[in-house]
Each structure stands twice: as structure tokens, then as C-alpha cells.
Image 1 (spheres, rainbow, N blue to C red):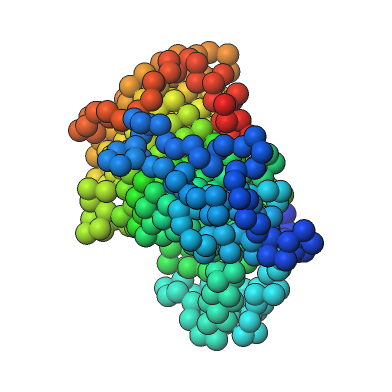
Image 2 (image 1 turned 90 degrees about the horizontal axis):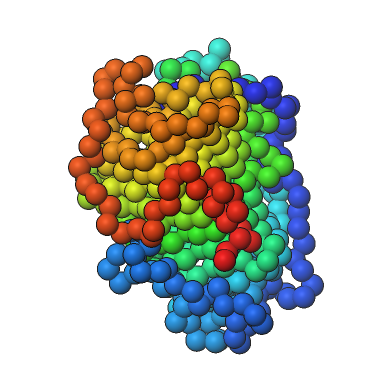
Length: 437
């Protein structure tokens, strides 16, 4: 992967999940049957509009809109969320307040794992760089990670709507939409799905890398998923503040909204993605056996602010990327925007790219083994100057081999496409949690 430019790192201990939040006294399980939607709230009954991206294909995406009153619940803590997701479907789950875990990293550690011990055992000066870690401390790390996974990775079943009431936050939790169909997730602030036990892999890239497990939202093997009007942030534990071990950033976060493992028919709209490294991955391997012909995703009217990469990175899929607002205020925290991966077919239309003077527009694309990208109507602003940008020609002027300018398809499922010049205003006003019109 391209090397990440580093900010001055903070010296942090293994405390990615530091704040224990007690179960609210209002409910032993933190989950109350609503009987009907909360007063004045109808978001749980809303469905994806016809024609709004790939998730509107076929039967469309309705989530839990057909849930009977008994299947509508309000949750205020992790236990309540777990119970609501396990309840009969179709279901509507309203998130109220801050839903957090009530354990720290130390609670998950087992088998004698400590970060200090792990660093001593697998220091490249001791372990070398030819093989991945193995032995007692790696086994202890893996067992600790499994304990965390069991607690923080929550499965979202088919025919589900999860929607936030005003101010709703899900923190330190990975929502996993796995082998499901017909799921809606809206109006929630997602914070800091941090991995307490990242794995060191000296064989990953030229210098090795730390790899973490959790996304805020993971979509795997699923269809008809709508992710809309959410805010994604690392909160007070940003990637940029992680320490450096073995010369590489100690990566405690993975994606914010990753769509992988033969998932298909997904719309990602009106979200705010902020201050993060690996933001959105569409397709996780170069193996076509499962993914070829799938991974059809629409990404529209999202805000990407100060993100390093994967906005999105795509393999195989026909991905329509339109009317998104990209802001890269610092070259030190930007690598690329659109990753053109193996057999990807990205159609990038009427997006707006606002870059600092230090960011090279040729870096907006990165070739991960793809061959072509269609770009239409995109605008670039550097300083006070706004001008059209041909993304492919700008990339080709500085890189070899050239990318082709025809991804081989034309999107048909989309809402009205705004002029690129209107994107900063519209997206800034309406993208993110709490801004549903």
C-alpha cells in the first residue's frame, strides 16, 4: 500500500476502549418495546426511494419498515442493542443516547498478552521480517482479539432498520451486516471501533504493517443495504495520534463502512466520513471467484473530510460515485481518493474536490491493478481557483501505465445528479447524522 505520511505521534498505551459506560438504570437490558414509533418519529418506517442507487434494484430496500408494533424497540445500551437485533423480524431498532461497551481493553486480554511483551517478541531485530508472528504471544494476542470480537462485533440480520434518535451515538462497536438482505442504517454517529490487539505483519508491504479487525459498519455477503445520513469519526482516538511501532503506525482502526465478500446492491448516501485512514473498501481480495459480477454500489452525496485513502477503493464492482464532496486540507493526511482495483468499474460523476495547495491532483486516483475509470463533470478547487478536472488525464500525465477513460457502463439507477458546483453547499448542509430532511 502507499506509505502513510505521519503526523507527530502521541505516546498511547493499549487503551483504545478506555471509558466504561454503565448499563442505564432505566432498563435492565437497555431495550424497551416501543409499541409504536416514538412520538413524532417516523424514520424507522422510511424506505429507500425508487431509483436511489444500486440498493433500489429489484425488490428495493425497505429494511424493517413492515415491522409490527411489537417489533419496534428503543435501545440505550449494548445489551439492549444485542437483544433487539436478536428479536423477531422484521424489526425497527431506535438508538437513543450513547450506546457503548462497558469493558476496557484490559478486560479482553488473556493468555498473558501485553503490548510490551508482544513488541519485544516480534521486534524485527529479533523476529526478522520474513514470516508472520507465531508462538505463545501471537496465540495470546489472537485469543484476546477473539474475546473482543465476541463482545463488540454485533450481527445485523435481514429485514432490519437501525435508526438513531436525535444525538444517537454507537461507540466502540462494529455493526456486522453478514449474509443478510434488506438492511437500513441511518442517522447515527459512529465513533472509534478500535481494535485493542492489532496484529503485526512484517510481510505486508515493503516495511510491514499493523492490521486491525473492526469497521464501524461491515457489509459481508449481503444484499440490498442502505447506509444513509450517518457520521463516522474516530472521536478522541484518531488514527493520526497513534504511536509508531517498528517504524509503522500502530493501526487500531480498519474501515468506516466496508462492503466486501460478494456483497451487492448497496447505496451509501449523505454520510460524513471524517479524519480517518482506511475509509471505505469495496471488495477485499483480488480473487474473482466470488466477487466478479457483484459489489454493485452507489456512493453519493457523502462528505469525505481529511481522510487518507479508500474513498472508496474498489475491486470488481460497478460503482457509481457521484456528487461527493472531497476535502483534503493537509498533504500529510492524504494518500489518494479513488482506488482503481482489479476489474473495477468506477463511474465518477459531478464530484467536488477541494485540495490544499500541497496536495497533487494527480494523487486523486491510485491504480491498484485496475485498467479504467469513467470521469464526468468533476470540479477541482485549489485555493480560490475552481476549474473542471479530468481525473484520468490528470493521473495519466504523471503515472504509468495509463488508465483508460471508459469503465464500460453507464449508471441508470440514481437520484437527480446535482451540478458539481452545488455539491459543497448541499453536502455540507445535509450530510451526516442529524441532518435528514
